[in-house]
Image 1: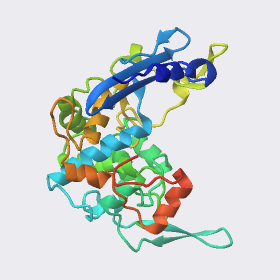
Image 2 (image 1 turned 90 degrees about the vertical axis):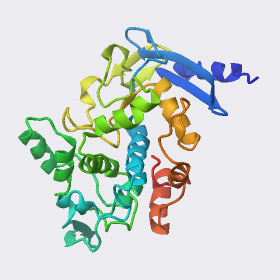
Image 3 (image 1 turned 45 degrees about the vertical axis):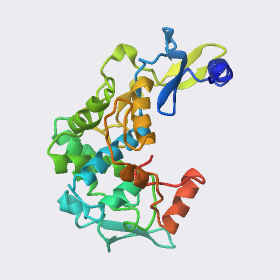
Length: 314
């Protein structure tokens, strides 16, 4: 039997010694849950303990869910990785690419290659941010709702950072995947995830909408575990352009107890603890494989160290 006494003691030091307000850890071994531990607070000011029911923003851990959803559609034959993005979202057909000159000026030249769906998975499309003037205008014209597909169509007005497929850049490509899913399925991104991942895996607290504000983990800029003081981020930290926007790159809320179920499904080649299969084993193998060109891999190494960027891993 495994002994987690030392691990528990170590995790309990994070509050006072490492200035981490709260954290949770869950562990599976041989596809069985073997350990859970929660320490610190989800709300420092009100001394609300961090627990298995604490809800937090997944941020970039959303990306793995997004890619899983798109790979489900690939398994069903709804598209090919080599398909051009403009076949589904025509606004991306005639893209311009930034070319920098030695004197610092920038030329905008027509793209020589279309963005493919695989470029979105691997973040080699050249797409940059969703926070552009065109996006802000589109949001304003939608009564500030900022629906996913409308926002991404506006993103297409922005020039690309490089020729599609030529480089890697950690940007909004997985947000575009969310909009692509809406075009392919005719559903909202969130509705598809609910029906095809969250409900089948019994992930009751995972959604683009915060289901219970009383369980939400507050965000802090600064935290001192010795003095028990913190500076709350509050409403100043907003990433999505509008309330209706469902970000494939970072918009989901979840809990440790929910997300470990999803993670275990991928660790078990697509088979969840409750016996539901969300992906085929070959598809999960593809997620774990290297897909970047040598040049793009160099870009990623500069960005994230020696790790490899697989098709669908954040």
